[in-house]
Every structure is written in structure tokens, then in C-alpha cells.
Amino acid sequence: MSRTTPVPLLLLLVAVFFVNSHARGRNTHHCDRPSSCGNIHNVVYPFRFKGDPDNCGNKNYEMVCENNRSVLYLFSGRYHVKTIDYTNYTIRLVDFGVHKGNCSSLPLHSLSVDNFTDRTAFSWNHTDAAVLVACEIPVKSPQYVDINYATRNCSINREVLVGSSSSDENDQRRYSYYYIVSGDLRAGDLADDCRVDKVFRTTPRPGSRDTNGENPEHKSNLSLAEVHKKLEYGFLLSWDSILCEDCTGLGRCSFDYGYYKVKCNMRPYTCE
Image (tube, rainbow, N blue to C red; front, side, top):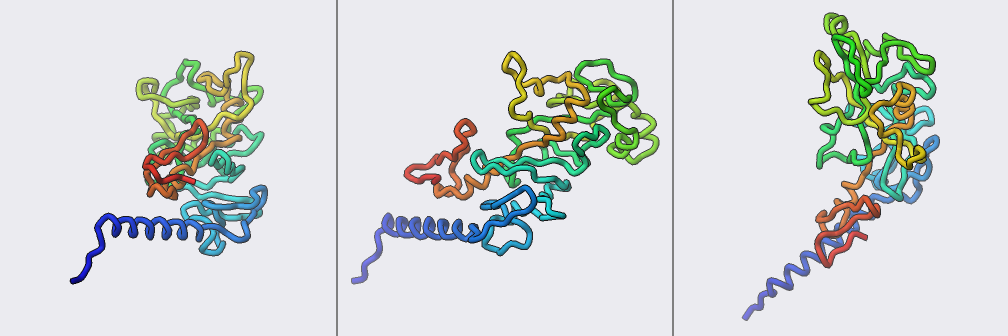
């Protein structure tokens, strides 16, 4: 008489095989010799550079080394990689259109929260918004940073604004007043006869604290020079999504931003 394997035992064997295969798959993502480019050294999983061996990193996190500078192409944009912090799982990026000390430079690419979904490689939890608004008439509001005229410390060339706006000449003549709104702009906050041209991502610089212990970069009534400092610093994105993907809990996990750790939601599995 033939014996059949008990169903619980069979399921256990399948689970052990899957977990072991998953662990082996994770190990193939690690390089024997981490790559470097410019100021970014010892790149490890999940990041890699184009041209690295296939077992290095994850191709969804592939950077390019251009003229000894680390570059990340994200959506339709091109960004300088300034730092990668493997402790809190963040990467800091600066749009190629922004030049330090040059207030006439603006980001070339729009990047809003709509770009980020559960399927994208990065999450935007560490970022704020800076919104470029074009208006038909002047706007008098402390929330709207006037960038139409030169100031003592900072100015933006008209050509830069036109280049950031619509290519339609009639639109350019119609929407001839430009402003930057720091922080998320709700639909009710958009002034009459205005439209949103671009949305930029920013992250408050560390150590930016006033006498009350608050970060002044969270204010909505910043000057153009202050807004540009934020653009120069760039913004932080997190790769927490892949941390859950690699969890031995088969993806059933969440990310604790307070402790910068992945928590497994399915015992007895772990996320180590």
C-alpha cells in the first residue's frame, strides 16, 4: 500500500524551499567589489552602476557614472546623486538644472507625489514641495514668492522662467507673472487666474533650526534666496519598498520611520 505525504508536512517542505531560494536570490545581489564614482564611494545593494556585473545590486536602482559624477535617471529627470545613507535608507538628489550660488537656475524636471506609487522604486516620505506658479495678474500673498524681478540677493532670468513654462507663445504672454510657493499647494490655495507649471521636491536641510527649535524652511513665506537654498540641497528619497520586498516574511512587512527598520507583520518570519 502506497503512503501519501501528510499535507502539513508537504506545505512545510515547500515553505522551507521557497525561503531558502529567496535567501539565495538575495545573496546574488551583492557585489564582491563595491563600485565608486566621484563623491559616492562603496556602492552596495540595492544600488549599482551601469556596467557593473549582473550580480551587483538591483537594476531598478542603477546609477550612471558621468564625468566622475554619480547620476540617477528617475522618471524623465536627470539628477546628481549627492549622498547615499544606508543607515536610514535615503538617497539625496539634486536636479541638474540647479546650480549652487546661481539663483537664476531652476530644476528642469517636475516631480510630484503622483509620480510615486507602490510600484516605484522610491518613496517620497521625506520630501516637501516647491511649486512654480504662473499667473495672468500679479498676486499679493506672503505665500507666493515673487520671482519676476531682481532682488538684492537673488534673481531669476526671464528666459529661465519662459523655458520652464509652456512652449505656446500666447500662453507665455498670458501667464507672465511667476511665483514659487513653498510647501504643498492645495487646490483652494491656488490664486485666481493662476496655474501650476511645475512641482519640485525639497527636503529641509539638517541643522536648520531657529531660536524656537523649529525648522524655518517649513515656513510658507520664504524668500527666493531661501527657496533656492532648498533646491540646491535637493531632496531625499527612500528605498524602503525593496526592503519589504526582500523580507523573509514574503513581503508582508512595513517600514518604521521612527527607528528606520523594517518590521515583519507575519510571525514567525523576520526581516533581518
